Image 1: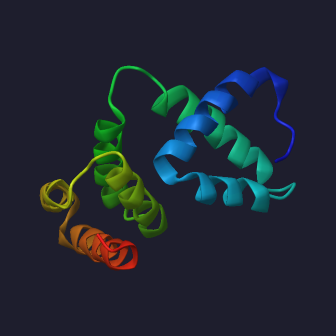
Image 2: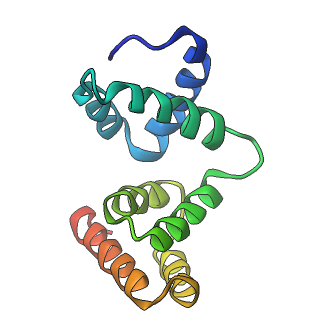
Length: 131
């Protein structure tokens, strides 16, 4: 792992723990190890701010945060991130039935194409992970 800006070290450490818990230690460690001089600042920023300052806040359970992420990523139609967060949601206790309901609900507000893509991605994760 690259050196972390001392000004954000505490948030980075807090975020790293949460990020590993949600996305899996192997995935996170590989992502950080693969970061180069160009991409490391983004990894540092996301770990400290998205994970350390947002995901680590006490106001919502991780399961709820996962459910929100799934809805937002469906709205944004961000397939790669959605696939990653479907796995994270399952780790955080979101059931297949709840995933279905999130994507059905998103269909109303985000449109059928976005929901169809989310269903496709979830089924792909289920097949790959034996869910």
